Length: 470
Image (cartoon, rainbow, N blue to C red; front, side, top):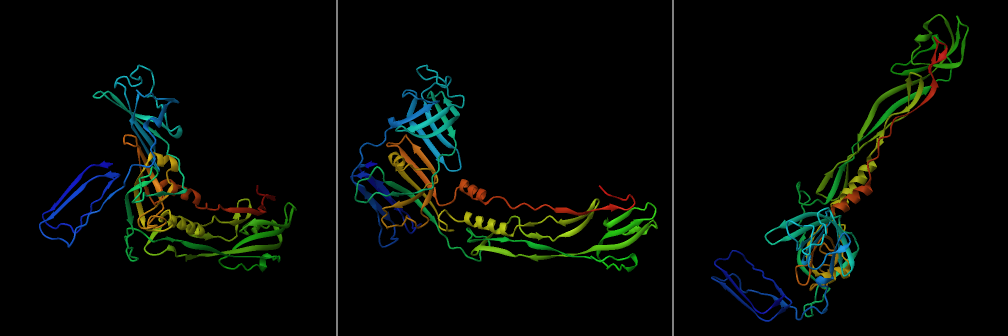
C-alpha cells in the first residue's frame, strides 16, 4: 500500500484502558501526523510506532492475472467469458477444496458464452486451475448462481482435499531497512496459547497426560489328575466335588462281546449296573473346577497430571486346559479368552500423542495467519499440512522451533481480486483430522477374543449298543 498522508486523532473521556496499541504498515509512505488528547494524564508517556518499508518489491515481474488459466473440461475459458479478477481459491485441510469465479453470461442462458458459444457448466463439469502453466488442482462444478441484475453467473466448484506435504519450510520476514521482496512473508497475527495448567484442576483447559483403566485379570483354577491303575467296582472311593471320567474294560455275558482295551463311557457308571456286564477293570480321570481368581490391574499413566481418562477394551482372561464330557466323547478344552492389557497401553500411548501438538509437546497451542504473494506461494510450492517456521524476526529465532513453531498449514486462500494477487495462509500446530485418523489407522483394532479350542481325546463307547457313538 502506498500512503500520501495519514492523520490520527485519538480522544479519551476517561481512562477505560491502560494501554492503547496501534499498528500501521505501509510499503511506501510520505507523511504521518498523530494527535492524542487526554482529559487527565493516564501515564507519563504515550508511544506510537510507525514503520515504512522504503521502495516497492524488488522483483518487477510478479505473476499477473493473465498467467492464470482455468480450463473447463480441458479447454481454457476465453477472456471475454471469464472474469479473471473474480477468481478465488480456498484450499482447506480436512475439507473440500473450492474455486469460485464469475462468468459474463446471461442468467437464463448459462451454458452459452456472450458470443453464443456452447460451453456447458450445468453438468458437474470439470474445472482445472493452472498458474503459469503449473497445474494447481481439479474441481467439479457444484453450484451456479445466476443473477439478472448484473447479468453475471457465479460458479462454485469443489474438489478433493488439496495435496499434502509435511516437509519443513522457512518463510522469512522482510528486513526493516530493506525493500519488500516478492518472496517475503507478512505475519498478520500470532496467537500463542500457553496457560499454566494446575495439576489439581479437575476440569482443565488442557490435559498434561493420559490415564486408562487396565481392567482385571481373571484366571481359571482347575485341578486334574489321572489314574493309570485299574480298579474293581468295590475298590472305588470317589472324592467329593470332583467330576470323574470313566474308562471300563470287561465283557457282556449275554452277547459274549468284550471291550478291551478300556473304553471311555462318560461321567457316570450307571451303564454297568446291569447284571449283563462283567467289569474286569476301571480307570479314570478326575477334575475339580475351583472359583476363578480375579485381580485388578489398576491404572496406566502417561505424562503428568491433570490426566485425561480414556477407555477401550481392557483386562485379560487366562484359561487352563480342562476335560469336558460331550455327546460323542471326551474333549480337551480351552475356554474363550483374551488379553487386552498390552492393547490398552498401546491405545493410551496413541491418545497421548493426539493431545500433543505436531512438535511433540502439550503446549503452547499456536495459531498463525500470514500473507504472501502468489509468486512466493508458487516458489515454495506450499501444500496443506506443510510445516512452517518464520525467520528473519526482530527477536532472533522467536518463531523458529520455539513458541509452538513450526506450525502446520490448515488453509490457503488465493484472491485474484487483489493487486497483486494475495495468498492468505492460516496455520496452527494442532494435528489435522486426517492426521488423527492416520494415527488411529496405524494403531489398528483391539485384538479379537480367541474362540474356544477343543479337540477330542477319546470317542465315547455305548455299552448297550456295544459300539462307539458317532
